[in-house]
Image 1: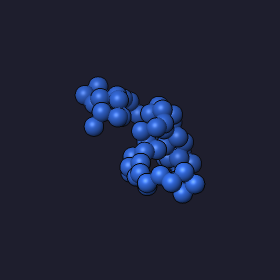
Image 2 (image 1 turned 60 degrees about the horizontal axis):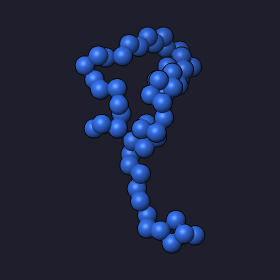
Image 3 (image 1 turned 60 degrees about the vertical axis):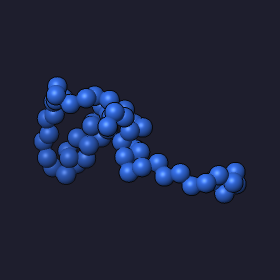
Length: 55
């Protein structure tokens, strides 16, 4: 940004969620719950869009 003399561009609060594979992100969250001592089973909702960029 400073080296290239470009203006600041905010990537957004959900940048990391949008750029990752949603399945990989879900597995990481399940692993975090497991590390905290919780059992988690998830299923994908059919009424929600699967594309995280469409909102």
